[in-house]
Image (cartoon, rainbow, N blue to C red; front, side, top):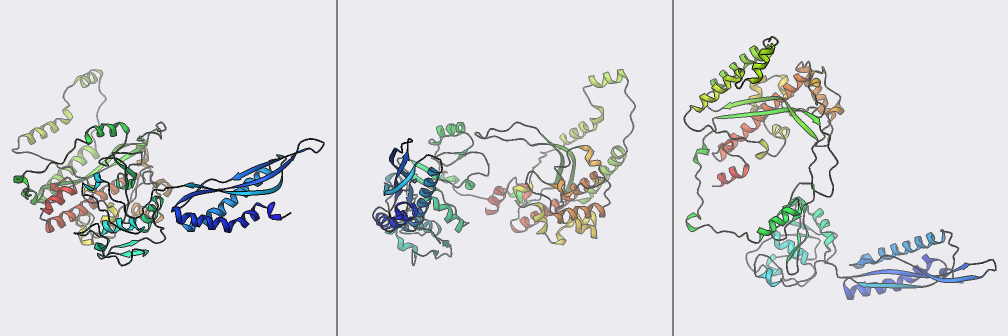
Length: 543
């Protein structure tokens, strides 16, 4: 008997050439299809002591596999051969009693497959074309995906639908250089392009991200790049009409009721001209207070969130333990010096050396509980009363550094020249100690979770500087820097280190933002402290 009739690998190897040729011909005719292989075998089984037997034909098949290009056929066939051999071996090892007589025949099964992918030109639906908002290049090849990318990155003024308008030498090139200098990498991609290969294109071109939509009586989202929508980690729900995103189906449904009613309103002719009117914002804000807090981070025990719904898990409670502030006056520094002098006197006489108080009697405790006016803070009442007597409004503009500068404080400080660190130098002088402070320090936020730890007489180990929020550990160089700062500034307890760390942060922040203010005032003639956010500043700078 021919050994190939007993060996599945040999049997399928003989069948490989005619099957592969048939599959290639099918691909040329259909452009895409799915196939699998059924291998039929004859088995025999002894059923009693008289050696009576029964013969049965059994089949071993594979899952359907989609084919879209010729180079996918051979790997798919080899993979199916391995699957069939593995199934046969598993069947015979189960002590079923069946013994192989011979391989009878092999069947090739084909299914129609119409994948969603780019192909040659298809006219835009009338509903889309009437909007005159989409470019649909009339290509006569299989590279419509390339033409769509090219038309987006190299916009032309006339005949947007013609391929000749984009001045492409050879659309089949793997790397295409546009006339405006943009380079598009299509290396290794097969065309017409499959939807699953769009992510490969994005990896080849990191500055490009693709959103894909389909149309079948209405516009439907097929593939959206999440990073363009939100940095939120929970599930999002997107409106098909306007592409706004929401974090629950209820909010999406509420929005959809009004979405179709939203229309753009054109401004009236008398209001169609933009003019700069905020001339007061060209003057300096007289007082700017740079401040920061430090907190004890106490862990919070909470239940496990439901992964099926959007939720926020509270990990820690922030309990303020220290604050520092620096007042920048753009007029007379003597006012600040006077304020600092008063604060020093108050600190020395009332905080550093608090007056001892006698234990209250029962009558005094009763009077204290029933009191409606706190005499200790009566000066605060007088202070507010005096402020109220001043003519004009007293306004405060709260500003977060991140609203204008998105880099870390450490990175921003490194961008400054030594001469720009005027505030830090004014406090610590131009000394060796100053060089230790002209960079962002490190602090064991997670470790400081109680007041007692602020009385410890040394820094904790490097492992205690691990940051849960960023999931990063303290580098050895940063830890050695912290040890050096502790030593050079004669820190006795953790409270000393916290005070120095907080004070330095505020002084560095002052220098960074004051430098930013100077740049904006020199270039745009505007003080950033007159604005809440970057868009407001940018808008007035444009005008």
